[in-house]
Image (cartoon, rainbow, N blue to C red; front, top):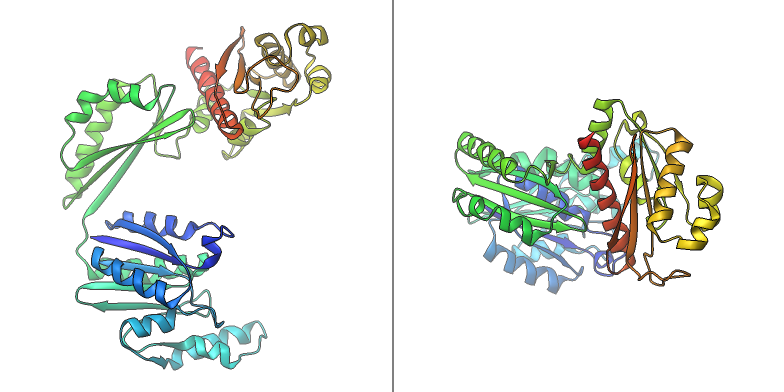
Length: 414
């Protein structure tokens, strides 16, 4: 069973808003066994909607449109759908009454423009919108479905949860789809692929592997699809167990919720140990990663973003002579920063970063992309030099991920 998602609106195409609707819809469809064939964003014009809708119905069993259902003249999706299905708009009195009651609750005048929201093509099944004024629309012909939803995220999600997803499950015989994503750090895509090649070649035909690389980490997503849920679950569990035995040194956790920052937090909590951070070139990125985890305050004590040399000296007690001799981008300064923050916060572990994120090297002789990462443990301190290339965003993200990777390894050692 395949679906296509079509988002309508110039605001998406000019970059004014991010299309988060498609991502959410795709995730929810996948949970019920519907594969997304294509996602398309188009202009709010009749010609464009008709063309893309016609193409989508050739490729997919289910087409979901979002956007273009507002009360103003630039919202033309409803009229275009009526034309596409050779239909006319009719007034649904129950919907009009619902909108009128909604306006009355907030003492808002009910106008003819608002009443027109209750106009829908006669061939559609209206979907009650409890979060706004535009009803959803469900068209079913020739064993295919076209669904039109408002573009406002909370309205779209409400209609999807309460009306669309249950109706799809009732209408179609859907397969089971299971996903398992394994999070790895410390090795590039090609090298990981080489290590797990034999395992990958022997995966059951109904399980597919996808490599999802990012700066400093790699996700391995397993997808199983079939009619028997129990067979899929058993096979998935066995294959994941095999993978854990093949690359135990690289795996941080399973699924996106078990990120490296979650894994570090669990380790620190289990050991009743604490962490502090001193950041220069990463500018607070590591601290942000750590503090997005609920309960991080039980092990993460605090951080200093020591961007200028003067702050490294005043807040972290880095010796001025050390900076003058080795420059701020050096292993010596990185280690001094780590010790400084460890002592300042009285933490068991500390991370420090210093480097040239670019686009210029400022007053150092180090190449743009050079970063020193230091880790202070309860017994020692060490640092490593890395070259993360360009651009600036890449350097910051890779340095942050690498710092957490180094920290995790040290916690596991101790």
